[in-house]
Length: 141
Image (cartoon, rainbow, N blue to C red; front, side, top):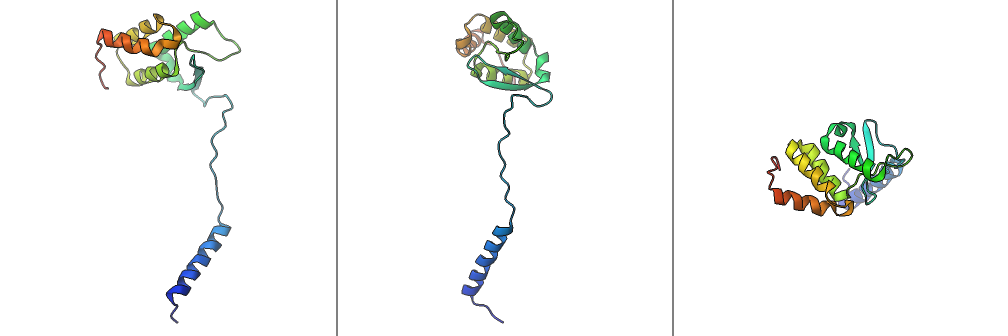
């Protein structure tokens, strides 16, 4: 028995429709933000109210320790509110690249000094300015 190409195409469309009707469709929804970080992580906020979630291993970094000290001096200890670090979101992203890159102690100190010497809202400009004046070589970038 030979089937014409026209009937074969119609039969294929019919089978595709039938397969689509019985198929289970799954939709992946974004994970709701309930305010709690994943296990082994902590949450901080920047001065421009951006939320950052970091692994607990970052707490051993001198940069983060310095940022926490500066936050305590500027905002006090928040027992019921969020932890706000004294820098904007762009500076936080820069800090993360430094912590991930395991930079030298000299560069960590330079970053913390530049953050201390400027207001929190203009921290990014000060970091870039301060580092370009000091001409510190960053290895690995």
